Amino acid sequence: MSERVGLWLIGARGGVATVASIGLLSLQQKRVNESGLVTALPLFAEADLVDWSQIVIGGHEIRDTTLVEQAVNFQQTSRAFAPNLVEEIKEDLAEIDQRVVPGILHRCGVTIDQLAESKIQSDHRTVDEKLGQIKQDLLNFKQENELARVVVINVSSTEPPADASQLPDTWEAAASRLEEFPISSLYSIAALQTGCGYVNFTPSLGSNAPAICQLAEQQGLPHSGSDGKTGETLIKSALAPAFAMRNLEVLSWVGHNIFGNMDGLVLDNPENKKTKVDSKDRLLGEILGYDPQTHISIEYIKSLGDWKTAWDHIHFQGFLGTPMVMQFTWQGCDSILASPLVLDLMRLTERAMRAKQAGVMSSLACFFKSPMAVQENNFVHQFSMLERWVKDISV
Ligand SMILES: NC(=O)c1ccc[n+]([C@@H]2O[C@H](COP(=O)([O-])OP(=O)(O)OC[C@H]3O[C@@H](n4cnc5c(N)ncnc54)[C@H](O)[C@@H]3O)[C@@H](O)[C@H]2O)c1
Image 1 (spheres, rainbow, N blue to C red):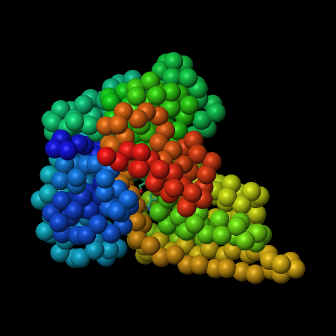
Image 2 (cartoon, rainbow, N blue to C red; image 1 turned 45 degrees about the vertical axis):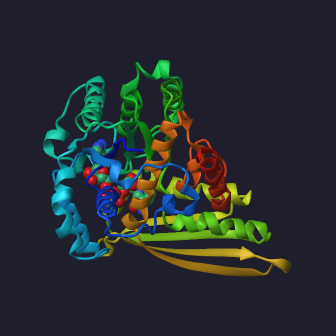
Image 3 (cartoon, rainbow, N blue to C red; image 1 turned 180 degrees about the horizontal axis):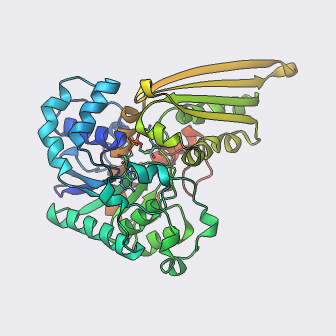
């Protein structure tokens, strides 16, 4: 395929987006191999996925900073890749930065509002005007860069919980009540209305509302979410089925998470944290078929930067009622785990667009902590769903 395609990142100068940009440039310039990328597995060899060289990045961002500044800062605080890498690609990063435009705030809570530069904080346009602006930004990106298709991926800060049951459940009703949707949903609406595929890598509402699902069907476009499954929850969704299959009763599962990046700072607000904890907590009961006592903590520890430590304590009971314990410690660099999945999701969504697939991509469940429209949380079963999709789509 020789067409160029766009990857539009909402939160374009955040940790995950910055490393996705560094990663894409490194792949395009053949500086790195493809480890960490799911779509580089032999399974995808015949799937006709877009080549790295054809992808162009742009995005929305609310903070007054630059991609190079964020990349240098990331390297200095988290030391996750070779020290000279940022220096070597800084002009290419600056070029991507020119395609990043001011983001929009709407119902995303005070912690996120405070991150934004003052001009964005004092944007008092109506919700229709804000939606119109996002759509115009996407159309400009597509036109100026001569892109055949665009996939919009939400990697912006986690919003406080939004109660989807209070929102209108048909697109017809929602269209006149847009004011009630948070900004993550407005971005998804703009994406779908301008012919883009959409992925929600965050636990924010995004397109996960019945009215927006209906819009995606009407527009004939694929979308997916929610909340990338990158670390502790990935291990949980692979490990919990083993307890279930051996009929070892899980009595309690406690997970403590500590990390120090900006995502952690936003999640330090109890409102924003609730969205994340709910997303991390829901899968256990669904995998086991009963609800053991669970506890999840997420604490912001600045000195750790992007390095997250999760300590999980699993108390379980075996034959003769004998209690036993399993503990694991996960130490992962958050953005290094997340950014290849963002690139994978872009390629898979773009492929679905070419195949004219519409609606929720349940085949992508293995990428998410809270997969939309899917009850299956067992990682191995979820991966089989992806395998089936790839085999169907392969040429
Ligand atoms: N392993 C992971 O890193 C991981 C896994 C799953 C989900 N996530 C989710 O992905 C998201 C990004 O994570 P991160 O570590 O990059 O966070 P981050 O805080 O470094 O980046 C978020 C970026 O979004 C920007 N932003 C906030 N509101 C915006 C808006 N309305 N419009 C445009 N930009 C906006 C912020 O200024 C910031 O640059 C978070 O919601 C996080 O919970 C991350």
